[in-house]
Length: 71
Image (cartoon, rainbow, N blue to C red; front, side, top):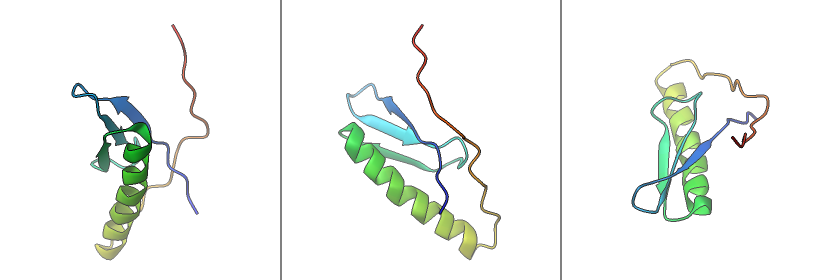
């Protein structure tokens, strides 16, 4: 099982958006951080299934760790 890094950002409307640097075009939205992450899990599964069905290569995850850096 692969693990993809997911970025969750606060949207202007107060909701949340999620995306993965390894899976361009694979995005999700939610009213809460938890909802956006749950939707993103489903989006990743759907995205990878679509790549496989189309005979496209599935990109490997590249992140080894994810950290927040305060500045």
